[in-house]
Length: 177
Length: 313
Image (tube, rainbow over all chains, first blue to last red; front, side, top):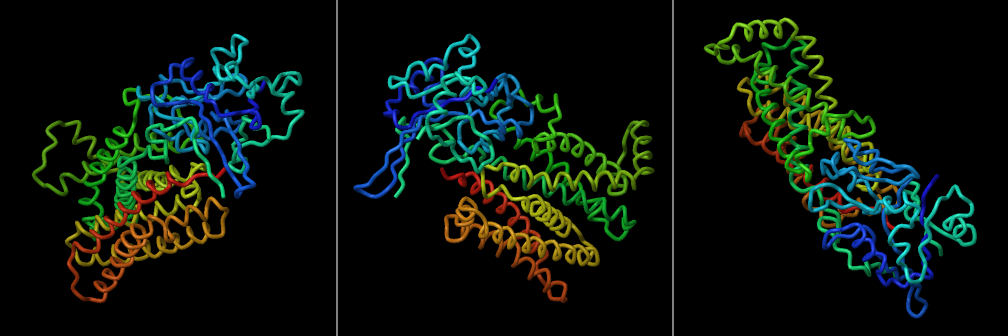
């Protein structure tokens, strides 16, 4: 089993519902967020290109945050989900330095926090909160090993990219282009 | 043109607009760790070579600074943790892929051992010193008996400690300025050079200072060589590497690096040491003070600048 997410950059309108849904679902403290939206404008007027990306932890196959964690608090759960055990985290910041996507932050309570793909929901067979709330249905979540899962189907029919593949982290967030 | 912004208004403390989660604690520790590694290494080296008598300051007096530096450095590391009460989790596991885990265990060994090193010379340095308890005298006698193997262990631990201060940073591939294997040897050489500087400062023996200055000059030379190689590697590297180097070649760290680290911290004290070796009078405190200052600046600049560098996507 390998959980992954496909994000349709052509359908995303940048409304920010996924961000609010995540903050509500996971009790993210005020001023922090586990997912966020990037608006990318490239080109010269009048031929401009606009891309919206709903970003979060990439749950990398070769996760540098897990490699450099000195206590083993950062670890990989079933389905490749990268999780931090709060009671084992000492807040040294090594994992934050190691993440090319800046997807981690220090929770005001001290430990390091990040997107969990809403593991507590996924275990029950539900989607992550951000996926369920998206009004344009541009987020596709599922198991890459299942050819009929939503994410597999989305990747099958569309061109896609990952962020900073040269970092060698083997990210599992796919952006449909 | 390329413009990128967080439409969701992300502004997480210490992460946005650019990464800054390691403040003064980490560079201060890296400096003190390297200093202690240098002090311990050369004390042990001269014991192994059988030169205790010729090098009293290096072997006996200067190592007093090592446990002090290590304890202050460890306190700085502790202050840096944001989940402090859980620090003991470091010692529930050994994780070979994490340099920080290596470092934590090395420090756990080398700190008490450096105290034992100093203690074993206490009665040499202060003849009136009394250990009060009989078992302490017995322990002292045992340490003195096994001093050579003890020195070998200390040399190896000091090498690990010195290299680790650099590898700690170079293991992060997300920060292109740090992600170069030259950082390990560079921090080792720089740390050893600061250790030598402290020993030179404490030595009252002219001959001893001459020997130490000669070794220090070699280390400064190697350090300059490695710095040139560091930048050659960046300039021949990918976009992220050239962008990291640009911070030092015209960017915001140009003056702090080339003037304070390279010129005032390496080239100027090296020139003074050379002049001193030629027989001219140079204020005794000046070359070592400059080297120590340069070493501290080097670590502050590297930690601060490295956090800004990142992958471009």
